[in-house]
Amino acid sequence: MPIPAYLFLTDENGVAIKGGVKVLGREGSIELLSFNHGVSVLFDGNRGRLTGGRKHHAMMLEKEFDCSSPYLFRAVCNNIKLKSAIIKWYQINDAGQEQEFYNMTMEDVVVTNINPKLPHVKHSDQDKFTPCETFGIAYEKITWKFIEGNIQFTDGWSWGHFG
Image (cartoon, rainbow, N blue to C red):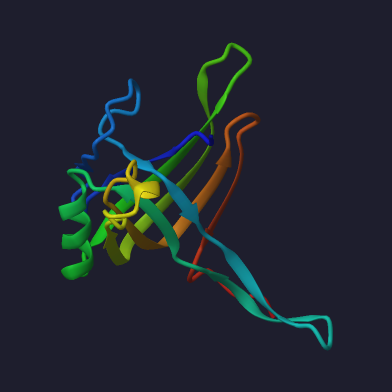
């Protein structure tokens, strides 16, 4: 089973938005159950050329309901720009301990949508699933960082275009 990633959010005033995680060192974060994100460029397959600049797609994240849920609804309903979002990724190190190996830091974050869902309660194959919500976030700026070696790259949606 994959190790979950953890989301740390700060509101428009820089105050941490508390999630339901109680794991030591990650207290108050939001456990992510799934993640999907991409950056693409427009490409003309007939000519073998790039035809435009890159496009950052909204991140789609899934989590269980927790104390951060009302804040996410508030952000999307009131068009509130959050100060930051940090996703921390963990792996098992040689000592058998979880260790952060990668993170993504987003600045000037907006919640683009939120969709709660309840598994079908009459299907026995879903009896261990809990209510969850999928939500999208977009950002002005993102930094991807591989911790070992401090390898990182930063980009912004509005920073120049190719071509």
